[in-house]
Image (cartoon, rainbow, N blue to C red; front, top):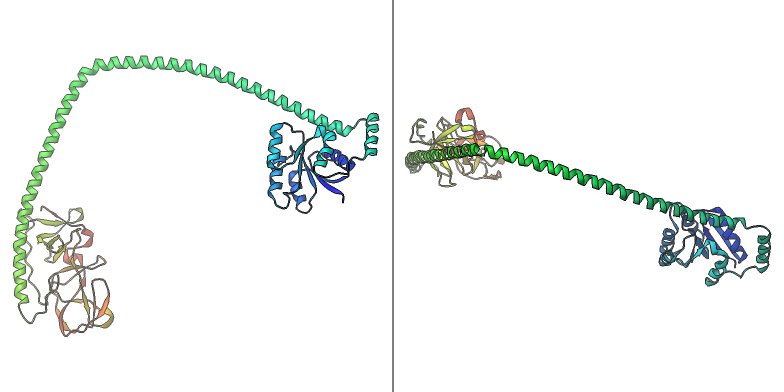
Length: 435
């Protein structure tokens, strides 16, 4: 069977020349003019050998060899580099990527038969054709071979010219860089000398003014020390005054708390009154002490955001470490550890199932509460009690629970009215302060 070769070269004359030589050795051939066309050709046809040029537009020969050998379907096809590249370095690169050998275009006449014999291809040269070729070459020159050699020589000469130009450009750049560096060095030395002279002049001027400046700095330091000492003394005096006022206010508030607790004990001792819950739970109205004048020096006040006075201090809250106070309109409230207003609202009763309707509580009048959503509620100072059996209850977490209790004395729980209670969540955080 006739062996087939694939010639890959961007020079059509080189393709025709090699195809003619292969035909003389009994090898058929097809030609393509780029590496991309060669890869497309190999998808449908499998030649017995590939002659591959190196310098081509797009991918070069070495890149193409790498792709051919990485494909299992084409990896077994022998590849000969048919090129003008030469040298041991290029031969090593080609063989490392999978090429069988490098066949130089200048010596293709002498080495083609040897290369085909290594691959087990060719039927030997057609002696009569070779003899005719010799006679023809003696009479007429082989223009295709001559043109190939001329192209190779022209490429080599152009490479030498480009190399010489690059060497000349590098030499010129080194000379230019050397001149620029020398100019910059001389310029920088001159600038350094001028700066040193200017600094020496400034130093002499500063020394001349130094004695006067030193006295001025010493005087300013003495004044600064005196101002700092005076500020520290004033702060200590203010803290001492605040401590005295707070102590006096706490003692007065504690006395009022004791009076409130006594009144609560008297109310809860009545067997007809329901059991109390936190903070003060009693169906009957509990008397609220009249607010002490805010101008009294011995009392402390509770102030909100922006310095607004929200009430006067009654005492410390034992449950959460906060305070208990009385608003200007006579409503009792608690201030938590973080400055929040209101007693904790533990449970709300409803006269209908599923916690529908107006909420009711079993506490005394005149208290301000706070629910889990930071909303304020209160029981009116003049609110009336209601006697009824509650059917549902909402706990402190907002869960609705059914209840089965007897008739209970309850009081309406109202949403906070700041104009009435003189309290609002906008005042938070609330803190203790001097009046």
